[in-house]
Length: 297
Image 1 (cartoon, one colour):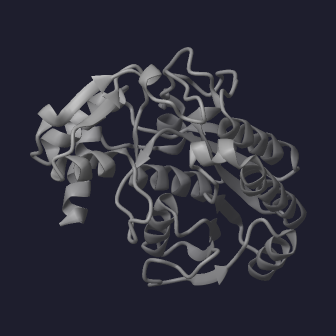
Image 2 (tube, helix red, strand yellow):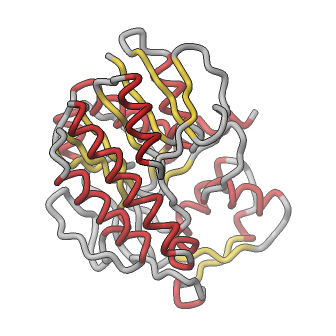
């Protein structure tokens, strides 16, 4: 099966690329704006700007994959709030181009979405929960979902939550790496204890994408960890895993942070459907941290 991945240099993209290169049943095609940041052991790499409809059509027509896994997105929530034009271009317009090309070429589309399409009034959520975004990033990702659903291609949408892990170039941080680095530097950090998530190991999200692509699964799937945790819980557990000083971690609430974009207070996912239909098996948060520890050494 030929599978094309967008955003192969992102945290998820890197994990997915490694996974697909290890699968002898897959003929992988990796795309990104810049050269691949991990070694290309097998498959093909092609530069692709997904905000160009001409490039999207040309690359998909050239390679004719059976499935694309669309991981590329503008995910910095505050940047999306401040630069709405760039957010819409990267998250919605680009997805429209990809979905339309998939429809015309008969390609199955696996699209990665987010818990930030929800308002945070309750959680954990199943696939039937009604979206109501509280920030522009969430609005853009919900619009992208609708674009995928309406383009006419066969599709799966995989929603995820608070992804963490180790990337090759470490250009982007995440909550675990931020906590670890701050504590190693002896900094006192304030971490909110009134938001709830089901944090997702990047390898697990890659597993979900791979399973959905291999099965050409259709519909909406929640792909995340299972355990509901606050960022404060995450920070404390991280400190203990890496034998760092948890006394430097101070609990606070989200009213103490002035951020351009609002955050939903409580999301998190119920992942029963993904486990039953896809065979998805996530790590526990502690197992995820242990895996990161081996990668960081």
